[in-house]
Length: 421
Image 1 (cartoon, helix red, strand yellow):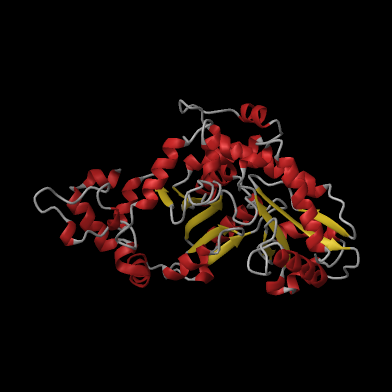
Image 2 (tube, helix red, strand yellow):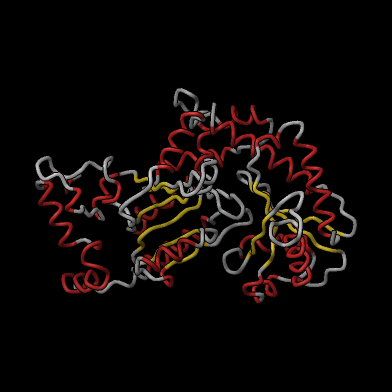
């Protein structure tokens, strides 16, 4: 605000072009800092939850920040960013005088739909400003879970209490902590969200939202053939390309988002209700798997999901190592996924791998329940990690009476796949 008041808009833009990181680049920026202040700062880092999408590594590589400067923050047993580990990372950065470009919290991890305690991350940023003199951009990667915030709005836009949502789901979900995390999305500097996930809209619908839209001007470039010479530059609603890499965007995805939001409002009447039902169905599936009795096999569950992705794995009674467990679950995945057999399976699932150091905080309880392998053996396994099966419950009808039959059918199909059928 002070910058905008200090001079005419054109003068402000020229000043930013002369001195901002976006124009002078990292190398020149560092040289100028050292020249003006006699102080060469270490390379800046980006802190990310260890469950962050793999695209974050692509982002820092493409921007020239470097993947070595992407610092993962450990997760807890529920695959959420560990606030203690985040504070330690902030203290270490302050002690080394290392700039922090951004901290990325995950609101709905791709593998588990785990939602970081974003409200606590916000508090830690405020504490870091007071105690450590640190300032950084706070981004919420809500690509998967952002739509869940629709549960917390009435049709008139007012907030819903968690107890009201629990009354409609009939479960102890959502927790007060989950609601606080979703409401904290409004306290971040930016949010990314993918309507092609829980928005049920075809790819490539996606959005990046800035709390202060003026920040876009740091990267804006106006092509001369789209500039209005007599009426000033084009409005941002007319030409999105000035802010994005592509320069042009098709309108079909945006139109589909607009139409879907008109049909299903972003509140308890529309998307809120839809996502509530998928979460209820996910808990029905989680409970059925946890209580399943499969001949010769045990089902080991990850914690109940924050939203609607159910993760689990199977172990045979004869298993003696992590390699045995991984081989079994890879075989189940092949039998229950597309492209691995002559016929399509009756039910589908996907799989992921929990690797070190990203999942160090979550692996010990799983290994203990498995009864095979050790934390060190898992760490030594490298890319093999621990194979975990996943079921993303997008079907709201799984929560209804008929859904119980599909859940039972899924469990039976899992048993047959484990036995090699």
